[in-house]
Length: 311
Image (cartoon, rainbow, N blue to C red; front, side, top):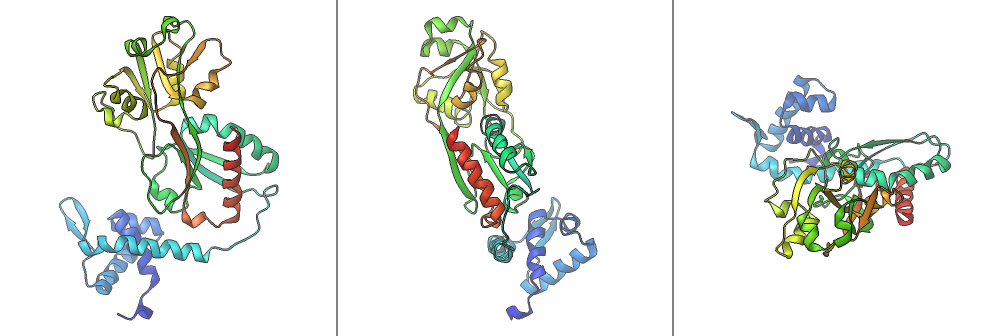
C-alpha cells in the first residue's frame, strides 16, 4: 500500500463511522450527504480489503480488523489536529471567548462562584457555559467540544490531561434540632436515616441498590470495612437536594466538607465530623490534548487552579 495514495478524509470518515456505526448519522456528523458517506465506506473497504462494518439483525457491527484500527486512527487524527492548531496571543480582558465546562453541582457550588467573580474582574467579556455530567460524554471532551470537565471521577481515559484541584474530607450535615447532636457517635449515626449523594464521571445515573455496597462509594465502602451499613432512605445525584433534605431532624447527609460548609452560617443546620474514618476524595479537572497548547485554554486552566488553591 502506497501511503501517498491514501486520502486523509477517509481516516476522518473511518473514525466517525466506527463511532456511530450508522452511515446516516456519520454523514450528519461530517455534514455530508448519505451517498457521499456510503462512497467513503466503499473506498475504505477497498483500501483495507475488509468490510469494516457488517449489517446484522442488531444493526451495523464493526469487524475485528476495524476495531483493531480504531485507537490508531483516533490517535493519528488527534495528533494531527493538535499539530495544526494556530497559536495566537490571548488577551483575557478584551476576549469574548465562550468557555464550556462540565461541572457537578458539588464543583459548581464550591469552586465556580469564586472563579466567576475573578473572571468578571479580569475578563469581563468572557462567557461561561456550564453543563452537568448528564449533558456531555467523554467523546465531547476528547473532541474539544467541552473545554474541561470538573468532577469526582472513578475512571478516566489515559489520553486526557488531568489535574487534581483539591482533596476534600467528609462532614455530616443535619438539622440543628436533631436529637442526635447530644450523643453523636457511630451507634447513633447507624441508627439514623440517611440520604446518599454522589455523581461521578459522565452520563445519566442508573438506579441504585442499597445492597450493592461496592457501588455506593466512599462513605459506604468505609462503613463496610467496619462491617457496618447505614440505613439509606433517599438516593440522589444532586448535592443541593441532599443538603435540603438534611434540614430534617430525622435525616443525615454525609457529603464533602466543602459542600457542607456552605451552610456553616445557617443556624438551622449542624455540621459534624463523621464518627468513623472516610478516605478523602479528589476533585479533578480534565481536558482534551487538542486544547492543551491553546493559549486561551492555558489561561483558563491556570485561573481554575489558582481559584481552587484559594478555596
